[in-house]
Image (cartoon, rainbow, N blue to C red; front, side, top):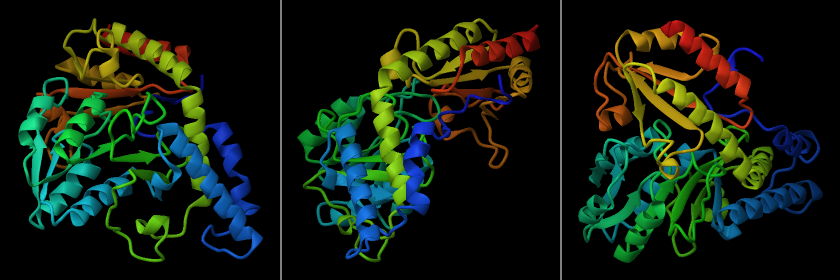
Amino acid sequence: MKFPIYLDYNATTPVDERVFDAMKPYFMEVFGNAASSGHAFGNQAKSAVEESRNIIARAINAMPEEIIFTSGATESNNLAIKGADKMLADKGNHIITAVTEHKAVLDTCKSLEKDGVEITYLTVDNEGCVHLSDLASAINERTILVSLMHGNNEIGTVHDVQKIGALCREKGVWFHTDSTQTIGKIPFDVQTMNVDMASLTAHKIYGPKGVGALYVRNGCKVIPQIDGGGHESGMRSGTLNVPGIVGFAKSIEVAVADMERDIAHCTELRNRLWEFLKTIDGMMLNGPNPLTQPHKRLPNNLSVSISGDNGELIAGSLLNVAVSSRSACTSASNEPSHVLRSIGRTNPQLTTLRFGIGRMTTSEEIDYTIDCIRKAIE
């Protein structure tokens, strides 16, 4: 084993060797600007971008022209929510989201609130799930957009976006989902899931950082948030990151091809870790039970909170293991994580650990992690 062991794959992932190999020519050999027409360098870059657009579109059952390249999911979320708000301003000014969304969605909504947009923040149950009946009750004649994530980055909860999308379609409301944690990890089809917009990023699926996309269904259009040369169908100006886009396409291509194997691998290791952790006094699972409700949880995510001295002991035992480790209160604000607070984890004495299993995680690494915790408890 190499130390430290990396178990934080929900935060980011290493670049897969196959992805890196696909990107390399576009740094020094095929280095043209994809917007430069009239010579071979620009045309080669443009061809690479369009082929990548085709690959990503096929992966989510979309049309190529529905893929808008961005710098990542944060920009995609901003473009989807702010762009839809401006586009649909004549229809209404009401947007619905949930208290457990990523800050890229919540802070975007808070920004719009300052401009007079009405935002409804749906509550969740103790597993982090939004109830469809609550969403239905919240939709009114002024509602223009619902933005609910597919998979939660902290506690792994997977929402039934197909039913959410169907309800939005029935009510004539646009549906946006932040699919950052699910693209390439579990099946995602924009047609069967009734999605109007979806945010994607590369670095969660063994691709490069700083590149992502927004799926915008034909028939929908968002007002751009960056003005410039009118790139990406006029919805996102800026010189395209050609190596990053090529890497993004390769990463999603590999992820879709290897999905069944990756799911089985991550699930087996995650469940082995949980089978041990659940025997520890004061151990609480955050999110749906991975053993009894696997379809409601990301296959590579395990979030737990530990009360009492065991929490500090366990966190301290993992000096050679990179996990997302924190108290329920952040040192900066002295307030609980908004996701943990939403499911009732408000005790400041709780220690929360998020284990993210990945494609490169080995059985030996999980056994080592378990052994570290066992020795600390003993």
